[in-house]
Length: 117
Image (cartoon, rainbow, N blue to C red; front, side, top):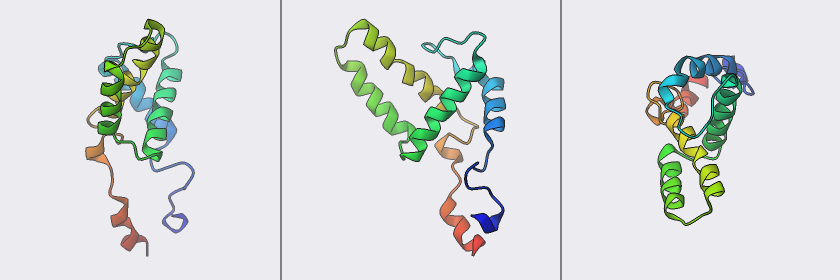
């Protein structure tokens, strides 16, 4: 990756660009459980970090959705139910079309290997 000129630690799309994208689209996400007030930048940063962690662990939006569906049917106290509903809002951003987090927009990195060699 270093020979390509792409910084390994920063990723292809900078955190700043992700934050700007998130702030521009924050109303379109339709958050139901995450409270957004004057802390919208912190909310978007946390959501992007959460999605990045899922992607690092190869958890797709479909796997996350299946997990949340199973947890939705389980009987839990009201406080825990509210806490468990927060990832549903994260899934909305993860599934949001037109962004690099959406699986349809994932770049096939395996195709870059012959280009870099």
